[in-house]
Length: 354
Ligand code: SAH
Image 1 (cartoon, rainbow, N blue to C red):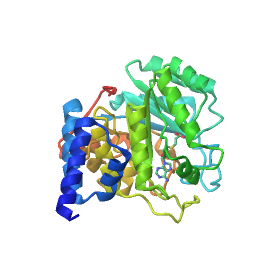
Image 2: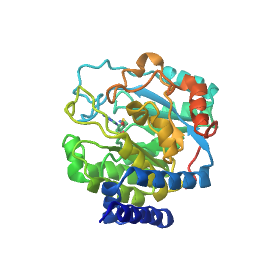
Image 3: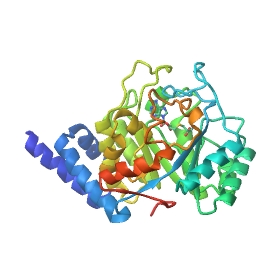
């Protein structure tokens, strides 16, 4: 097939995705493997149209509080894995976290995302107390938890304490691929089961995956899209895999900006009302990564609200940005960046429309 008819066929698939919001596995694979710069432009303009239909030019902000980098898990890609002895471990106290919220509230944040490693110090009781305390002080704010795999009962308790949302990336749908990224104690099935539990309980759920993780194929990405379609979450967080030099994947290659943007555009067309962050990882691999993410269909950014002294220690991957415009205290410069591409940062909870 020549290039021209190929482009025509792929544009047709993008149109089909726009109108039907789903594709078959083969069609996903054809799109992902056949993509060209011209197709990307076509996809992005369609994705922007969809996002504008529902969210206008608004960009929601979330204050990210990375409250502990202790972790009992040993994910092969992650810099805070328990077997990395060469990082300084920290955990914020309840008081520290509350003062991050205080600062964030004054900066206009109406969602606080508490993310951390799976840290035994933070028992269910402590999380429950923390969530209730934040919700009683800031009743107009949403609280998002991102603290990994827990039992149904624990998720239920956090929800009853007032947690609104939960982020748990499925990382990769394929069980074999999952097992190449994680130790045997962690399985794709267990991860996915958590997501179904979270949905059943009534959370606004976020899932997602890394783009360009080691051993990932277009087929895996196609399965990720099919899984996300079935789960129908309110949020999807994706970002490029980025090497961390002190992990088993130190010699692997990082994921690309181009494929990450492409997947963002596809997600916007598949689930038009989705909340889609232009992630820190995207901002890390390219100085304008987040702007490009917004232009590909994203509508959320998550600036860092953690105390500056610990930010560098939440080192999921190398060179993670943390002191520039992505920092919460630089809200004004983030606003300028978004204005420069025709979008505006808003002070709102930013709940999902689905
Ligand atoms: N413990 C929580 C939070 C994990 S960190 C949980 O289990 O959900 C948040 C996300 O960072 C992970 O889900 C993973 O997708 C991403 N991440 C970790 N290491 C990364 C790396 N080296 N490159 C890019 N993203 C990474």
